[in-house]
Image (cartoon, rainbow, N blue to C red; front, side, top):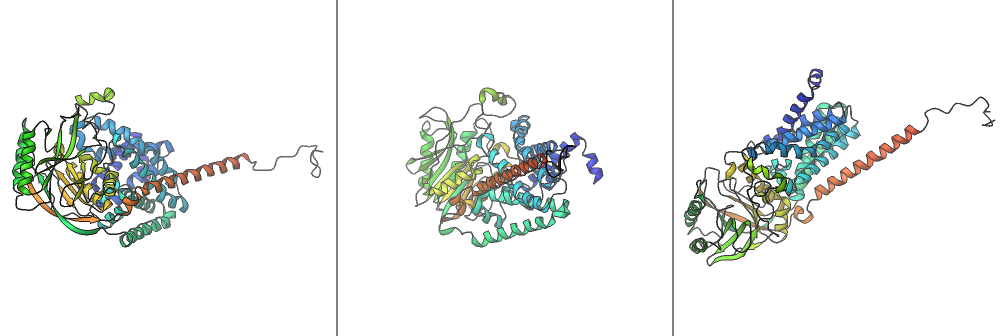
Length: 524
């Protein structure tokens, strides 16, 4: 142990170890999907920050770990952003510096049982604040939230219906903190064991208490995935392939057909011939078709990404314009300052325009659906609002074709399980090139994934659920609870500091008497 500590006295070696420790949780995300590893993946990072010789070094350990985490979780962006990804990771990693400092403050040295018990609440709360801040759309959105690693764990999905992915992140970090205390602080093992028992008890209670979705019917929804189509005329050829696949659905009685993001590369107002062809497909299959148009609009300036519903008579008028755009991919923040990103990667040459409100569409057969486009399925608040507004099925239209041979398609598809479990609604994740997936109201996968090598149309019989989950009803209460925990910790630290200062101001021994003083009559 002392050899390791001596080896880590080099700032460069310590920084490299910190970055590697921060990168470890990526193995819990798809594609590796080692969900169980998430419960110990932070332990090396915690032990490193705990052993920092100074508070400043602990903050730097937090920054290094955050840098490793951000690069690892977003490594598939490297072909698009090149060196820019390291700049972004370096800036966003600043949010983990206070977390590193907090780790040393609570676990450094030989912490008392009380401090160890506080760490199990305070450190997960601090992590949640980092996730909250970086979840802002302008900073990249909530991609890579630690709780998202639990997308295939049934008890965790039940907890997601209670507190969303926020609650899962909190519990995963709490278990990591408890394990770190168990392996490093013998004097504080009892609070660590108690924390693990409490986590297990909370999971069991949620399993028993949390309401199940009320399923009162089924609908048939088809997903059309054309696969990879390259070349200068890819827009026309992709449309031809989607048309061919959709014709195969005739006689299979779908209630709705969903195409992926950017499935139509031309505004239907400018291309009435395409609108007529989609309408003919709707008549032939007996179902409305939800397409996604990525084009300059004919009725207003700018490029929009829009979900459009097309029926037997053409576009129905149901339209949703994407509200949350991908930084650099669909717009460049502060383009006047950062426009140079277009010269080093595949950043957006022109900013796309934003929609203004979410839309719940009536697609016939008494079915109401809530569309989201690509990146938006990462945001728990968007699916929650759609469920609250009456959507019975959630639909995400996506395209990860730029990252076809990376972990991105699997990571993106896994988010649908969380959105379904959080809202108690079936979630359809339809893509151009895979991975497409469907999840039931409890977050369980329905039918097979359509992988990145698939080009087909598949019909899924999905349950229609009603009722409101605790997460839909109460929202981000786990985040509010974390804020209260941190506020209480700050107040306690402030009070402790005041007591220490008052104690230091009081004399430790009585003042010496002057020669002329009398012990009976002071001053004489």
